[in-house]
Amino acid sequence: MHAYANPTRFLAIAKPLTPWLLGVGLLLVLGGAFAGLTQVPGDYKQGETARILYVHVPSAWLGMGGWTSLAVAGLVQLVWRHPLAGIAARAIAVPGMLFTALCLATGSIWGKPTWGTWWEWDGRMTSMLVLLFLYAGFIALTSGDANGTGGQRQGGTLSRGAAIYALVGAINIPIINRSVIWWNSLHQGPSITLRGSSIDGALLWPLGLTVLGFSLLFGAIVLMRMRRIIADNRVAARLRRLADDEGN
Amino acid sequence: MTGVISGGGQWAYVAAAYGLTALLTGAVLWASWRAMRKAEKRSDALRKDRK
Image 1 (spheres, each protein chain N blue to C red):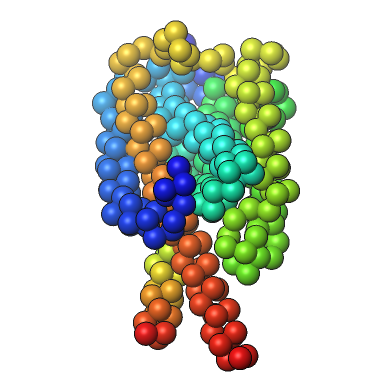
Image 2 (cartoon, rainbow over the protein chains, first blue to last red):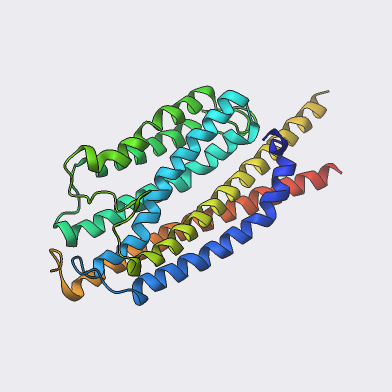
């Protein structure tokens, strides 16, 4: 793992990978959305609104998956002090928050014609809203410059407090997952589990395309943000060296 | 049986969900791309100056 701790080695992989993730991700998302809107039938119960599934489910998956990755990155930094782990955690926060917000917004848009309400303070929606606030808190905590201010250390990695915050916040992920089982909810129960899917196969295949496509786009955003942080760190380091040279 | 709002009115909700997703995802992709390009250009320029 530490073989990739060197930013130069990481960039050698990230630079060619970024356009591939972007291109393939966009193709899959466009294909999945096209199929979801035109190639599959409406749901027998919910009608056309069930097509919101193809953007809502990937958003939920990436909002929750984003925080899981962020917590793993926080743990890796705390235990192994891997320099890229903190940078990865910071890079994950914005796309994670984006997809959590999209999950809430598309769920609300889906809820109005289906349940007759935009919002309900039930377990699933409230725990997802908590996740949105957790992302906002993490972004606020780690904002600062590459000289080591705010919740980040010099070199763009996380402070100990930010890494612990990421780990503690991960408690919310199983709560979101089990919320529809633990509490009464307007939200339906789990549709896709390890044992199979309650969604008919005719409606399911575009979901595979959009989940994979949005996941690749998420990866592309994370790589772009990591590259930006690394470039900022290099600029800050060079400016410090220049200032030191002039001082001597 | 359909939901509370049925018929053609449902498509407006579908369009809103897809439109919002496209808009926000596109905006974050664009902003991340621009910020990365700007930072890497600045880093490269500074490295060339040092040589």
